[in-house]
Amino acid sequence: EPVLIDFQGMRLGSPFYDLASLLCDPYVSFPNGGREELLRTYYDASACLIPWADFREDFLLAAARA
Image: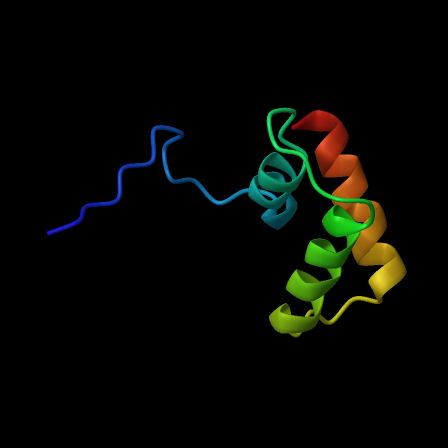
């Protein structure tokens, strides 16, 4: 049976941190526009209540720290 282990302590944090860690991983390459497309797909699926421009800006700030 699978078990989830989170070595970061499973604390609540920025919802953008894990997303930025995934989409901005230096070992992962995306085709031109691929990262932006995945970010927009995530935004659309999340039913986020903040405007897209604010969501994208918050994501980019988290990515700079990830």
